[in-house]
Length: 267
Image (cartoon, rainbow, N blue to C red; front, side, top):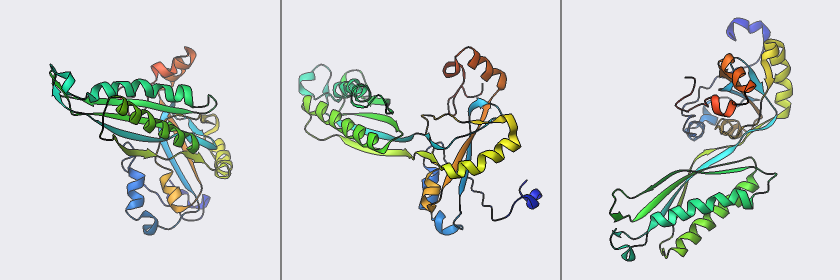
């Protein structure tokens, strides 16, 4: 399309097809592989993705749009023993269960209600049989933010809670924390938005709509940040219109509209 309409634009267009967005590692891998040295430095970066919404609607907005995120793998050490002799063990499963409970209080009691944070426990793994107290337990958390200061304070609180619960259980060896699956905050440049949105309005008409800030995350911003250039990231609705309109009318969007990467996406 761009080549067929060369009379409508000038300059250099560079298309990047990013791998591994689903794991949150693709953009970082491209940068680590020398992307900045391999291609010309652009003046601006533009990106797009499908999202829930009326099929074909192009959604744009300036400022923060997608939350920053990290996954945290926490390993809690313990001391294994037979299930019939719990007094000889230091039970990491019990400590992990207490950590899960206490983590729920961080956002509810330590984050200003005007701010935003998510701390979700995605997995808890401990033991492999019914009659053995295991030697360790593992928690994997998923955390999301719009503000770096809130992020720092929440991570400090997570570490404090985990270490305190380990101490309360008599665990001597320190727990370990592994951060992975990082997604940068998508913070669209207002100037780029002001340049792009009128064009979308003229081309797509009523299908050019305002985007809503979302708590999901995306690693696209890693690329323009590596180049040091502004960017705009937009999403295209992909929910069948009759399904979306019915869910909106019944106020059941969160219940009836599958989200990307869910097993029920576009059933």
